Each structure stands twice: as C-alpha cells, then as structure tokens.
Length: 102
Image (cartoon, rainbow, N blue to C red; front, top):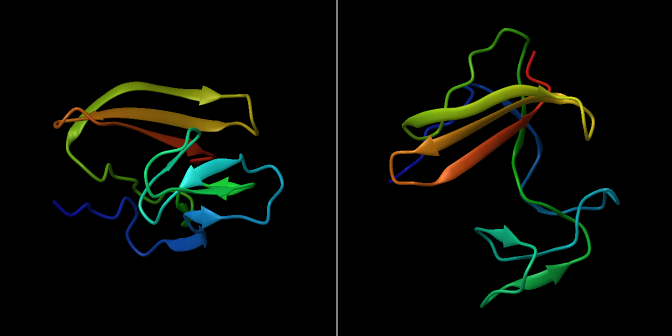
C-alpha cells in the first residue's frame, strides 16, 4: 500500500531522522520507524525527529494519508500549542497529526 501525501505541494521543513535540535527526544530508529525502546536493527540517536514536518499556505486542505475515522480532534495548548488530530485507519493503525494547523 502506498500512502497519499497529506498536503499537495507542501514544503518539507524537517525530515524524519536524526536531529541537531536539542529539544528532540532520544530514540532508537532505523530508516522506516522510531521508538523509545530498542528494537532489532535500530540505532540509538540522542536527538531524533520521528515525523515529517510540512509547510503550506494558510487554508490549505490537509488530508489523511490512509482511509479511517477521526477519533479525536482538539487544540492542544501544551508543547508549543497547535491542533491535534488522531485518526484510526481501516487497518487498525492509529496516527496522530500535531502542530499549528491554521
């Protein structure tokens, strides 16, 4: 299965991977996933960004990458604030989108 891009023509502002930003958490990761506990094939990183950060103009439509159901959506005032949307996909995965979606 291939995932759809959530925002058409978005600009990648921070990639998935090791980070020089001290606020990023320590994580174990390989080229496809990251976790706080060791797993087979993972390498430890002192600072790791476990997501893709995308930028687009205000008012741009944001779509889920897979079909599913929104199970929560609210404005989170912690950790810098922003809207948080959690989607449970049809295959049972739960994905969380966080950030300042205006």
